[in-house]
Image 1 (spheres, rainbow, N blue to C red):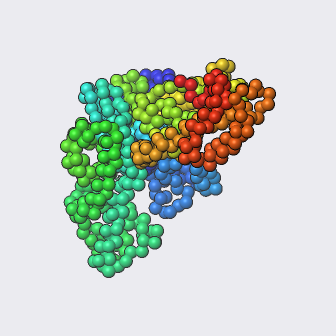
Image 2: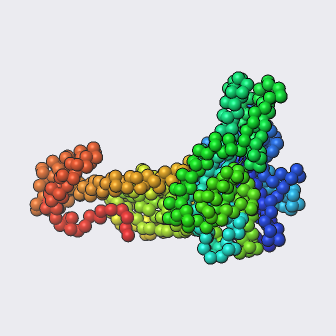
Image 3: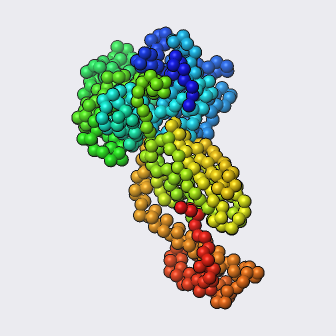
Length: 587
Ligand code: AMP
């Protein structure tokens, strides 16, 4: 842990998809850092033109001009290997995020008149190791020391000071932004927060409410003025989109509004009239869509609607009164909406900074969203850290070589709940070289460590030689909350067929082990041949069984395994008794 000086400033940064926000705790009070114009959030937009780098509000202006050097929503690419080509140069998502972070750092230094290099950055609860690592790297590139990466919903709950209420609370964080929707259920006990479940919809956000208004405007103009708006014209469609957003925001405060038709047609002086009731009607379906992930998250957390003590609102779209009303009727729970939903996450991150400094008393405890396991010799997964385990955590297990003279153990790290490795997400891995030896003799301890930031480090140690190899597991493509939910649901859906696959696999493995013992005797003339060994019959069996294994013919294997085992057992009785080591996992 970094050495933190009491006077040192730790920024809390909400590095958002659409907007970012930065806060700091001064005299135990969290506050947003504003710029000279009094702006409290920063558009997460970057423009790169030659050596010129423009970030934030100024960069947003370029968006409307359809400029090719504008980059937005880079958060969606974090943790991927995608390269962004801008003005003839290539940039990684981390580098672009670093530009936003540098801008934020400079803005904060200017406002506070102090050098700053320590930060806490927030990420969605479903961000995997690769995405978290990429966020940390972005901080490093920006010359910042990232003290902690924390989950956005946890930060939001911290900002509401829910820990101060003492006792136990179940908190639902409803985060509706511009383009994404995330739900998280947290449990808080005596100041310790645990994420119970996450869910969401990556394609649902304020933009959909804007689109509903845009569609209505087009239809209304057609009806009232018999004019068709050409949405193919980028200029016109951009104007309609931004005007629709303006209308939506107005309707958060007003009951009705006259829209100026001249903004996007040649009709001068014309208006169309929209009421809040109409707006509610046309977006009811969107509001209802948010309820599916909410339901999923609650079911997944093992709670019920009645057990939710608090609903915390995050994201600009939760400023719409319809969201608040809907949630109030659904939960009847205490709706926490005093803090500006655009700022709540950054304030929570700043509070986390103050906790690290010892200025505020609370503790965060997060969990891993999906189990982390390792592929074993037969293609099944051995789960090392179970889903929803609190982090940080280190769990080690001992494995052994599976065949004679094996020279390497392939450590493949998977994330997911399905028993067969290939049905899960491969996060990465490495090869661990071992000295050739009889199978089962070399034992390797494989250890998984997930740190406070949710980053996984896997290491392996040869228990005989003490040789160690380790790797930070970096993902290539991240999972969003809907993917995580899908994986959890699939595990449930395919439970019985998965179980069958595992059983079939075990059967194949058993017959494979027997086959290899037999082959060794048929091929090796040096070996002492036991008295009941029938070479001709053994060759016939070897040919048949090899074909069944090759073609994955489980039915034939099932039908014949006992006869085959009987043949091997009677032929090589003593050898089998001596115990050919079958299997990979030791404990
Ligand atoms: P975020 O991604 O959290 O910054 O949220 C951005 C979204 O919030 C955009 O779709 C905005 O149009 C929307 N938004 C911001 N302020 C309001 C408001 N007062 N009423 C309705 N929507 C808003």
